[in-house]
Image 1 (cartoon, rainbow, N blue to C red):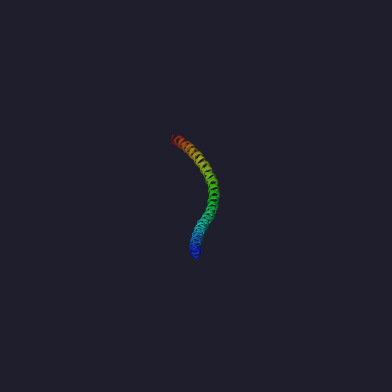
Image 2: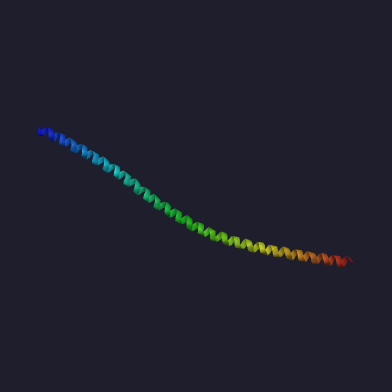
Length: 99
């Protein structure tokens, strides 16, 4: 009887050990996945930071281009006004010569 109880006890211990190993493997796999996800997150964070720096640089460049475009538009407007003024003066001079 005692031998039979020891055999049953050994079977229970073996089952518990197997369950503990399975649980340890499952937790290990979950931990491994979590670590991989963590590393992936840090890598993505680095990429996003680099993109943010690039975007900030491009924003600065775009703002400079916009300012240049406004300056060129203002210069073109002034030149057009001057051309119109000169054209009017020439037309007036032509009309005086014809008289």
